[in-house]
Each structure stands twice: as structure tokens, then as C-alpha cells.
Length: 189
Image (cartoon, rainbow, N blue to C red; front, side, top):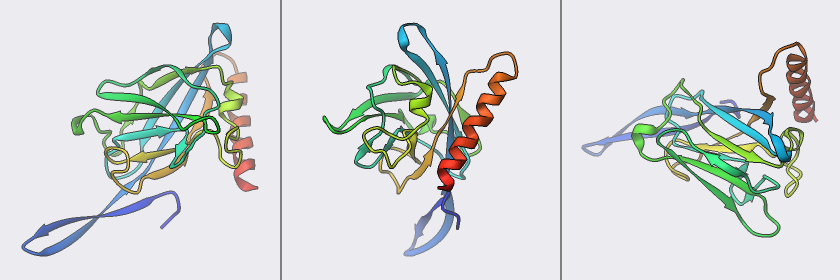
């Protein structure tokens, strides 16, 4: 089993017996960044479910016990059927955003995508795409997914990708390629 997929056993108990079926939790997030006035940036994450089970929680810039954003996000919005919370653990900790589906009918199905997440921040795209200031050994966009609510299973850890907002011209494509090369170089170290 690859490190990018976590497997969980789903058991159906019938008259004392258990038959197992494998369900894989997996996903990715692409964060589109654009500049706003006043030194703020708009970030629009799009969640893609690459697993075989639902996603009910996206916990952005977080692993258990560590919040990776340097500054508190502002103007956080959620897709229809989801809600958000800004999490902060104290003076030596950063911030994170936890988006959770309000009920099972809003879970993201396998092979589906979900947009409508957004937040504003004074953190630059380069800062968001780099190492976390409070926890420099982790990428700022290191995040977790859960199939339902927070801690409903062992979760799926991944690093989101930050890209500039679409624009005309070849410079945007070159910037995206350069960002991917930098990320691959950091991962290969």
C-alpha cells in the first residue's frame, strides 16, 4: 500500500460475523491565490476526492497538535452545506481552518470535486506555499481529511498545492511550473 492512501476496514456485523470491505480515504486540494488591495490575498481551495469513500472534513494547514498558518485568516467562507472554524492553539502556535460538512448529505462523494471554500490573509502566496513559520519542518499547506467529522477515522494527511489565479499570457503557466519544480525539489531533499 502506498503512503499516499490510508485504508480502513468497514465491517458489517450480521449474526456475529464480520465481512470486510476496503474503503480508501484520499484527496487533494489546489489553492488558487490572487492579490487584493491593502496587502491581502484571496485564497480559494478546491477539494478533490481521490479516494473511494466520502470526505466530511477538510482541516487546512493542520496536523494534530500543530496549526501552520502564520496569521489568522479573515473572511472565511464555506461551500453550501459546510461550515468553518478558525483554530489557534496559543502564542507559540499558528492558525488553521477546519471546514466540516453540516450533515452526511453534504459529504463529498468519491471522485467528486468541491469549490466554494475561501479565505483572505495577509500571508503572501510564497509564504503560504513555503515552510510553516511556527513549525518549519512542515509545509504550511499540510492538511488533513476525514471521511465524516473530525477524528471520525485515522484521517488522510497531504500537502495542498498553491497556484496563481488564472490570467492571460504564458507567465502564469511558467509560474505554476516553477512552483511545482520548487515543491518537488523540497520533497526530494
